[in-house]
Length: 198
Image (cartoon, rainbow, N blue to C red; front, side, top):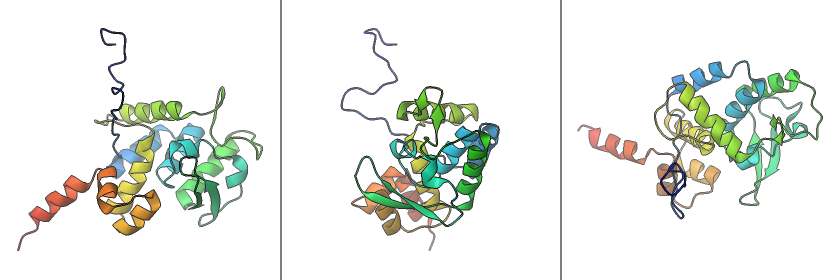
């Protein structure tokens, strides 16, 4: 705590703190192992890094939206922030963890997919969870709820070679520069340009 009683970990009014993506595939696997016996947390982490939704949209998912879906199937969701309807396609990793989550207890279709002891998870609770997972595997840096979405984008670009125009569309960004900055990879790509030898 600061002398005036404010939390020194909170940014000043008008300022923001940027969180980072999880850049190492090994670290991602380590977090998955850490969460292996926690079906809700494993599903939250896996969905977060595989479907490019903000935490505010992840926590609004209901069981009925995803129950019975298979790899390659999709569902529609109206984004809370933008009001846009998005079509989300699910991959095998997401289906596997969702199947495990739904088998872990009795769910009705109207139930929130990510329940907490008091009802539904909140964005601040997702933020705390992500921070705690990253801390538990000794990741250095600043991590939070937005880390999940950034991790998806980072690996789409760096690991899978997805083009910037496609990522701009997925994120709803106006420029390629904005997407590179968002994913914390612009300095790396610029450095890479200078390392090219002729």
